[in-house]
Length: 250
Image (cartoon, rainbow, N blue to C red; front, side, top):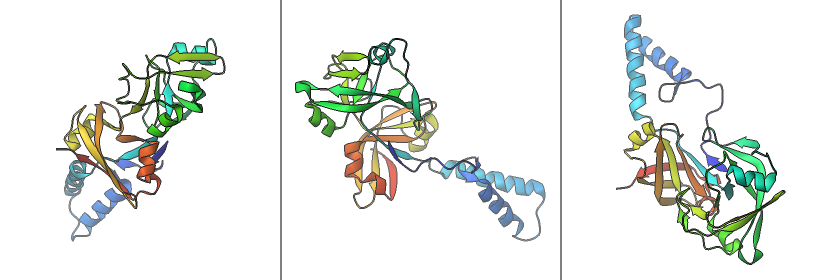
């Protein structure tokens, strides 16, 4: 998964809405150097005012991630594919808290025995198994992929999953996940949107593009992050983008 604008490095304390300690010290120094030293209460009041202004004007940090082909599994399917009593083994944490890329991979087999040999499993497990691919992956497998929101798999194509301990035939669950943006309720309020609304993503650079109709997925805890697939990321040359912006659709 490739991301633009990664998290700030550890060791950079952040106060309020993005003001680090150096910025606060600069504010205090500017207040003091204006003339005769003001009383401490006035300094505190002016710093608080500066912080409050930043809190209302600072745009939340946006991360844009390329979500490569992957699958989600139920507990039952993990055991059938990897062995009785097996659970997923976390390999790398994803940007959203509590989610991870597992060490386990599966082979995906489509019609006419076309296959993708090594597809990463993401955790934690879910109530229904699901495979998320880009359009080019679907062409390779011979599957006409429908564009769906994650979890909306009724009536979608199926495939066969093969692991070291067995195989699972999915009657449905293979999709191209529609592009979407995760955010918390504070981010949603900043942009003036709600869960289920649509936004546009502008990617700036030599291959700049505007992706419309990102599904807003807002909840209490998510970090601000857009998910696009490998086809979309390559089309915009995301790795060399010079900037990204979210735009509310009217």
